[in-house]
Image (cartoon, rainbow, N blue to C red; front, side, top):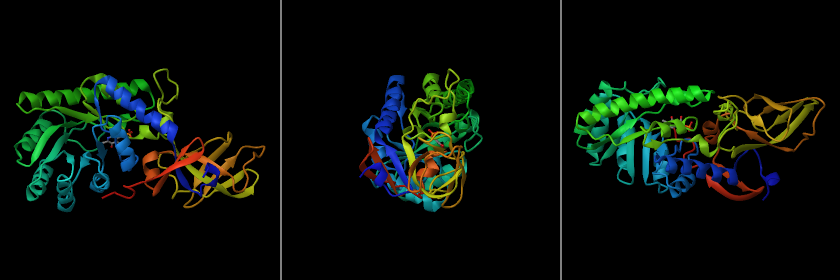
Length: 364
Ligand SMILES: Cc1ncc(COP(=O)(O)O)c(C=O)c1O
């Protein structure tokens, strides 16, 4: 089948640019001497995780236990749940996964360490644990320094846990538009991570791993010399929000290519300046702004209803007609992916493969 024959709304991967993105970050990590553990919360796909591992990735990150389950059951051998997991049900599932694969998880609270130890002990498995420190994102994470050391000591004492290092992800820095601001935010994050690592090592506890970084900042984590593994996710696909980040020369020229698109069809042309697509809120996420319309200059996606997307056409009326297919760049890739069961993978306009989105809806 060709692009024009695909029924819509559909989630499209352009394989050539997608593969270049995979290779580009794998090369940068290898050159920088750091490990790569790409975030699967972006793609939720075992096929893609296996491709990343084939290019040298250490494994994958997941954000939820159910996401990890989807990947482990599809043969991904090494997963870090780069998040806090609370509650006996979830922790027992996590401990059970540790019988099938190498599983890591983050902690930022002494009570959580006790809960994880109890679950791992109940199944007599070992879970790898990273202490998450807050390096400026004001999300999860214990304070750097002495509080991080206290947690590391508690983990190191727990018989079914293996303390492996720190998670120091600076989420708030990823979409700072200026290069200089992103660099400064990561310099501060690296300083906090290094101080904590030194304190832990001085207490006699090995701290071999510092994990973090996203698509917007990874080069600064490499340059810091503190981080040992990168968790970038969005680089595989990119989105309209990431494309607004500015580079060192202050221009918006992303180093990764847009490889993910939503394909939609013009279902109505009620007026000269309005076209309606069959893709609304249930086909494309709008939390980071409206999608961008590709290939049609002067056409703007201005509003998303449940199943309708409204396009504003610049005058004079351009050529969009009933039944035309339109490619959209999602504002935010991760939540858009979560709306679909399949990727339709294209190379030079022809369908090459369908890949299931194994972790779709895996939010528990
Ligand atoms: C803990 C963690 N690591 C890594 C990432 C990946 O970031 P990005 O998709 O911006 O590359 C995220 C994204 O939110 C995250 O929460």
